[in-house]
Image (cartoon, rainbow, N blue to C red; front, side, top):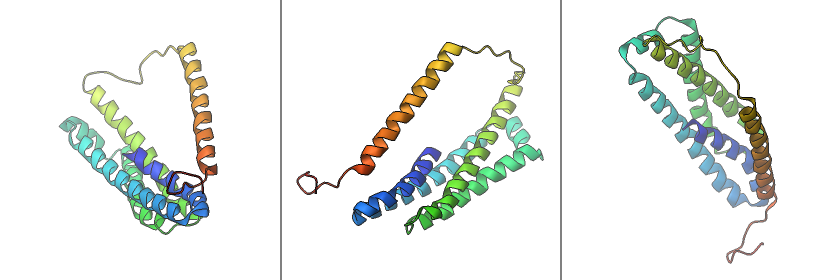
Length: 179
């Protein structure tokens, strides 16, 4: 859900190039981006609250305590989500990249807070069964890690190439011919 919101922020940022080529395409993409950001954020908050409510009472008690890490992480997640949802409305009239700094920053805060909250819930859930995730011996499989990084960089290159091709493409006419 949060990935859809992040994709919507990126799509809104990319609409400036589409709007320069075709005003109608820019407006359609911008409207779709607003729906993605707002819908993805609302769905992410709902999923997060549902997942927290589904936890056993012991886990909810640990995560609802006065622990400052939990309070800061939950506050960052919730305020980031509210900030993304509120600034998503502004994306509908956005025709410059500077206005996208606020939703992008809120999205980063929301994601960071969510990651820490999820980690605390995981640790509290596993502690109920006597498992401490921080007390493990780690043996790194360097060949798999190296392969992952090579494929990750190659994937970023492919995505960059696809974005470059899409940005430089010409709009199609009614019969599918370049205008």
